[in-house]
Image 1: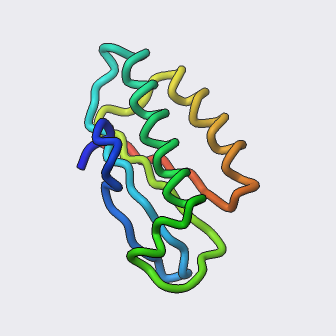
Image 2: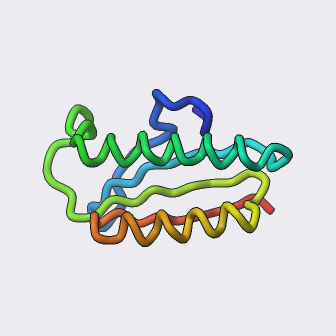
Length: 105
């Protein structure tokens, strides 16, 4: 499970409120920021497809009114990443998808 494994949902589950929560585990550093951002964008897009195509129904029954994508950065994030994620938050808001960010630093 890693941000650069595009065919895998790193972790998935439901919270106490009944939301479907998906985790992106980003273990990459920012030495190659452009490549890192492209990898992150690809992974997020895969998760959005997973939600919009209702692929989660293979694992969970019922309907979800809200989805949460938790992005956990091992090495924090860059200013350009912050700007990118701000745009992602705005795009996903009308889809009832919340983006949450956590870091180890």
